[in-house]
Image (tube, rainbow, N blue to C red):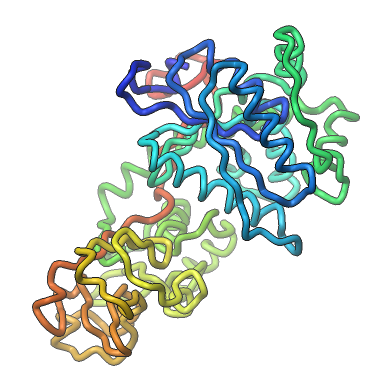
Length: 415
């Protein structure tokens, strides 16, 4: 675990290390092993409410964690409904609530139970989907998010080894029937890997790709530092020449608030066509002999960036955090895009195309403040501002793969 640190001290008064525990063999083994590593822990058990047995299984998992002397908290999801993309929606809701619980408890690290077979499955799926070299790196040992570090310490341990560990310790776990549902791609891949005996091959593919990804990330970070500048408005000044496609891809992902980077072929086409255009919620625009990457207006109009009631800490467009005194955000104040039509003096010389997607405060149908332009209708609103905080970094600041030879630049597990 030392190579996956640094960690907060394991002592009273310090925030605990959180861990996600579904009650299955992987996550319960994670809890059992974590308790032998440290005592200051907080297990987060999520009841999705999607199966009749889920509430009872959650309670059973809490009891098993108590027997392990692992403090736990139950999180119950009440707004999930069955339907299209249920697994993806459930995963998104689960992570959102766990991150919220981490914030409440002061946790800066969240351990996840993904193991070596999961890694092999992910590599197979991404290979079949034609993922680029970064995608083939699959899951990282460490993934940084704006709120917590996601740490996967079991990526080098097989599913069978974890269950054998639990059996030897006299522990039992919950088997989720969805893990046998062949309608899910991951389940089909799991069976295929078991039958073909290719799990180790695809695990090694992910580890090698991860090692190479980290080398590329370091090079891209240096290129960004030399040529690009992030502006607090959520824009990026790229300079007179567009960066190479791999660097531009990471910028598009961050500015467009995308979970994954755009397809490499799409980025290459954008560059080949002269640069000006839109992709993945962003727009490349040239102004005053320089390239800028800004949010596309159509992306701002999407549901994720729809007007929302203003409150301190609210996140708008998945990228901007509102900071303002609670007393200022009276009933009826909401956050929305500034929109077109801002007078030139308000725009401080910036193009209308750039400013239309900026976050703004509205009240009773009137625009009252655009903090990034240092404009407000009255002085009452001057203390409000938006912090640009993209949900993903431009370059991979996580830890992927494993090294097979000495490399002083690599920080992570050794194969």
